[in-house]
Length: 253
Image (tube, rainbow, N blue to C red; front, side, top):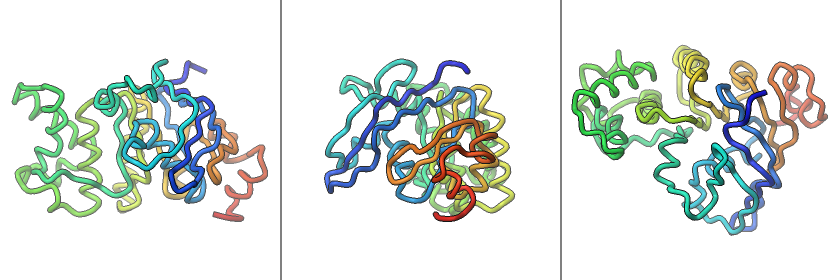
């Protein structure tokens, strides 16, 4: 197994209301693979994703312990450039958050903020990102329309295109297809399979069937604990932990 892209070491997170969101998590995120975090709601999956690109800075975190290493660097250090980090580790949320800009500018915004000034290069990158997100054919003739004029599913793909335009090393997706139709969901899943050759993918799907379909490596979370981790071929078919087996077989969740 190759060296991990992200190494989570003894990581715990408690919010100011006293809720222990994560408890001593030790997890290696494998490069060039689809890493799935799965489990029932409230298990800590979203909290971990938000920790990896420092969105917990915006939350009411009371206590953080442990390390999260990205390419060997502890991103929890106060000296970490969070803007740089979020370009390297992009995140797509379950609810799309388009910018109050045009469709084109929603995708171009990150490039411009990163200092790209070549208008032709920006146009080319925007088109490519929209194609990768399976949105280009639906918007190519109305790129000046507001991003919020799109449907919920289209807005989700617009947010994905915005991330892809920056060519991140890691893409994290929190229930990214919950608002998409089955055809578009299948396209996005196929796309994730394609891009894992050069991008590390971390996804918290909204259901078990998607978890089993897309995962190369999987980690089962329950009530803030990492219960079991392993290759998907063995974890979903022959889990070692009873709690994992009960969840996979639908006994709770």
